[in-house]
Length: 337
Image 1 (cartoon, rainbow, N blue to C red):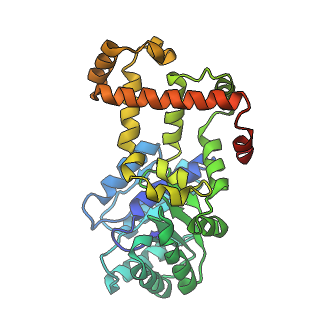
Image 2: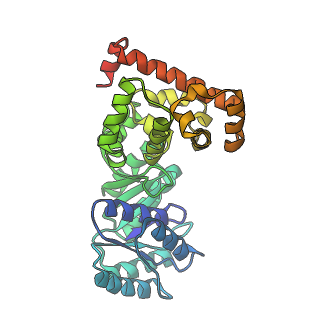
Image 3: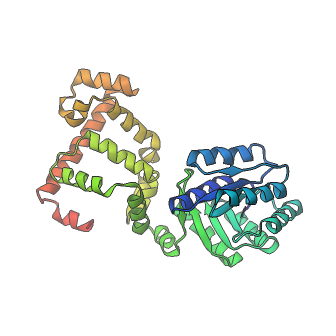
């Protein structure tokens, strides 16, 4: 049972948690009991359709919905029932009474508070109230995609005395991570989080294909087709800023680089340019002359200058790969082993 104030991200967190369980081989079942907020049930239903997980929301009160949902979930053979509850802009007696009644009906294994880490001390006060009046077994902190907000995790954990179980690191349904204190501390200190980065890479990348691409890099035969494939794999892992922050030493570097350099729009532009090329041009970018640049620019909605910039950057990357393959950068390479 997920509880929290309105706007903390309960509904999207319900979908994220359901997807996390599904990826672990479980059969989750989501329940929408927020009958007051307009389109709350429709929102969870839409999210459920996107990740192919059933959603139940039939009834005119939270208790009626909960009762029907438990019956339907048993019939469906669900391993977990995730209940999205209603929230308010502030804590009040009607809210707490509703949640208490719902808890009696559901008898949940866990009552998890979904708290917005960006709200700072407001999140801490809300956590204290929910713990006192409803009773919590754990916490999920949302919008924790910046290291400066790690302090909220410490304060809420101290006030409630219950463990932080998950953290939300973005808006997408796969942007939910189990909480590891040492990893968050490492991010806050600018030391990266290599373990989480490895786990994300293993979950999204095919090991055999990754080995093939590594061989291409060593032989300096890595082309724009391969680059496009790698770009799409990186997008599956989350935003560029997020995974660069996981690399030791990069969190401070990313703050000195303009944010637009890590914008998803920039990655989409590169993808559009490569997709506007012919297969031969992707494999042999050296044949791209002035007329081809103009055609690619028209097809991708960019300018010939954008094409030039991408090709120059790609040539520089190829040169670096050649240097690495010849052993000129052994000292640098050893740092990443």
